[in-house]
Image 1 (cartoon, rainbow, N blue to C red):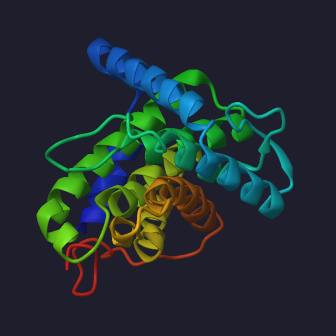
Image 2 (cartoon, helix red, strand yellow):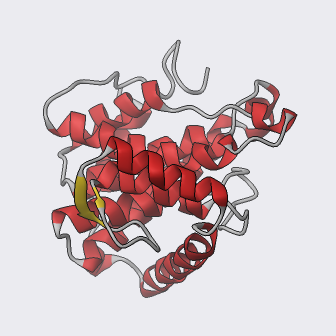
Length: 240
């Protein structure tokens, strides 16, 4: 029997930009503009500036843009900075059924890695579509009310899988390695709600970390690192 991760991997690797309905492409472009807007404003926040400084300390200079900054970073750290900044003002896109913010996990990963790889715009858009589909499907399956009750932030948890799907798509991983990437994401997915106790900035980091680990998970899988194919529905997997 195919696992959920394998089914998602096969679906994502089967996507083609030329056969994607025009209204879906148009919607993706609207969501991209929305993300760029909230990230541009969010980057002015003190928390965002702290995240940028930390990312600079952890990353060598790279070609991936940190929005509003003159110097780029490596893709994974640019994704962390941009994802954290984009979620800072709480005006990013949201889906009620999954009770999460998909764009702040998916777009930072897709744009940063796409820029690093020199991917055409059509591939970046298609990767983001795959990421949105995965994060929203898993977010709904996670049962947001149950996740909240256990202290988990769905944006951080499901967002890690969505960002991984976007990154794995850009790296053109085959279904086997794509499945490994999602399995690796399962061990990296996180997001505590404890920020509610004192107003800490970690809610914003949950989005940035999801984007960051999505690129890391996909890169590991690309190099042959394995992850559990049953990371989603297995006895110790995401949904349990």
